Length: 100
Image 1 (cartoon, rainbow, N blue to C red):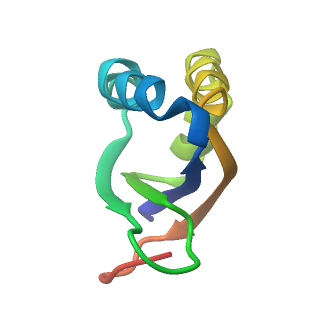
Image 2: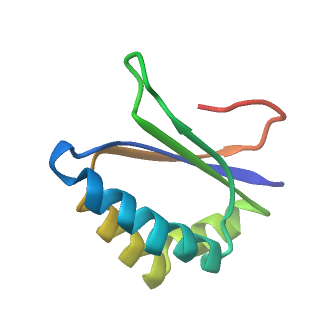
């Protein structure tokens, strides 16, 4: 059964430029190397929701856990934490519609 890894966060106000450089140069290529099929990327411009939502689809829950427990994911995640606040993640079964 396919699953979706949904990650949300807010960009730390003092790190916007470094955040965007890291996401484009390292985070996106890194998660793609790990086998995450990036499916959604949303930015909230108004309202009380996390500023960023990113979702990736994986073939199985086992694959998701394998990736999230890998050293490369831990490194990417730790670097991301230098630039964001209020990070949350969850794994859910894929539905045919938008998932938050």
